[in-house]
Image (cartoon, rainbow, N blue to C red; front, top):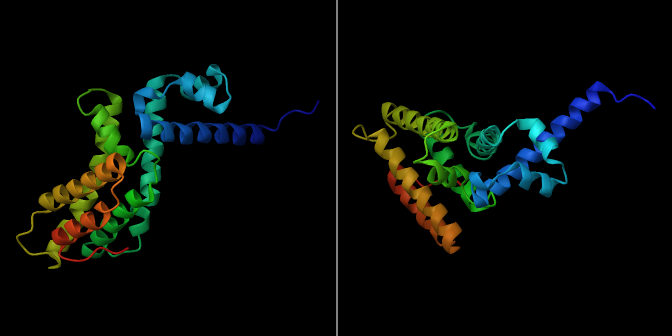
Amino acid sequence: MSAVSPRRSVAEARATRTAILERGVAIASVEGLERLTIGRLAVELGMSKSGVLGHFGSKEVLQLEVVDEAAAVFTREVADRAAGAEHGFPRLLALSGAWVSYLERGVFPGGCFFTAAGVEFDDRPGRVRDAVAALTGVWEGDLRRQARLAVEAGDLPADTDPDQVVFELLGATFALNHALRLHGDSSALPRARRVMARVLGHELPR
């Protein structure tokens, strides 16, 4: 019997880990991170519990890895789509447009992963809450920075408060996610775009 190549073994382990995380993100986006268990993933992926556990070691580590995987998806589907836009107002517009598109396209089966995770863990101290807060803080910080650069460049009025801009953009996307997921209300899409256009003084790109 020929020995299995170490390189092949590593590739297979990575592929298995990726499959676990992708399924974990899908489950957590719909049902919450607390419903994400080693046993549930083992059953759905046709693996043993020890096989899943061997990749993570504990439920909390699994949850943290799933949060990181969701962040990578969000980065690819939102931030990276605006990467070609110049910093400041063009980047802020591009990020806002990509943000709405991400919700419209239903990138996660349960809507915005971080909105759901934030609601689930906002009053629950611990590593998972800290991870969700840190990652959403990075996103909001980038929006704030682009708004500040837009003010400095004169693309937004001099008395514009970047914190208020981010607050209102967040409010529009939270409301959009709620309308789409809870009510199936697609008319919320143009409403959200109009709200964000008023905040930014410019129509969003599509």
